[in-house]
Image (cartoon, rainbow, N blue to C red; front, side, top):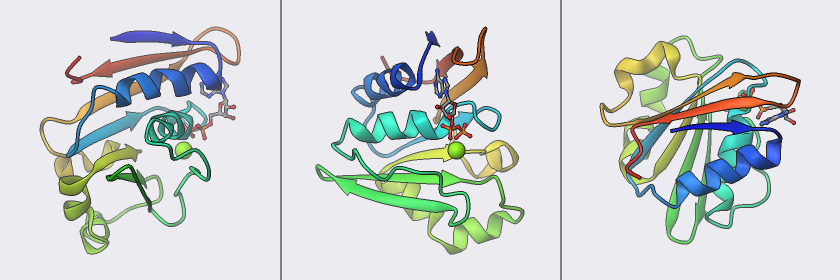
Length: 140
Ligand code: ADP
Ligand code: MG
């Protein structure tokens, strides 16, 4: 599916709608440049589970875990990661088996992602607020 977003709110809404169709365990790979809206997308996704505050980029900690409505949302940002073993040390394999995991910057670590993941690709459109959001691998 391909969507055009014209604002951060619209990006969050697109993510919220995706959340309605996804069940755990599932990995969602977020592909896009710095400032594309990967964290905004994650924030919208988490809001579908009532996680409304505090979804920020885990750039320095690698991962944030949220729990709500019996669901674990794992938010990873692999931008600064150089060694995939570090991921395994902090429980990545268990995370991806127990919740919905949204992964920013998975690009260099695709071999660690399960085969049946969802890909969300965000690119810039026209004007400063337009984003093209392409979602592949979702059920609905
Ligand atoms: P990333 O995690 O991909 O680096 P962020 O979600 O942290 O990106 O930041 C996206 C930035 O782009 C925010 O400052 C946000 O306000 C801005 N922005 C402008 N238009 C959009 C849009 N349509 N969707 C998402 N973010 C947008
Ligand atoms: Mg981010």
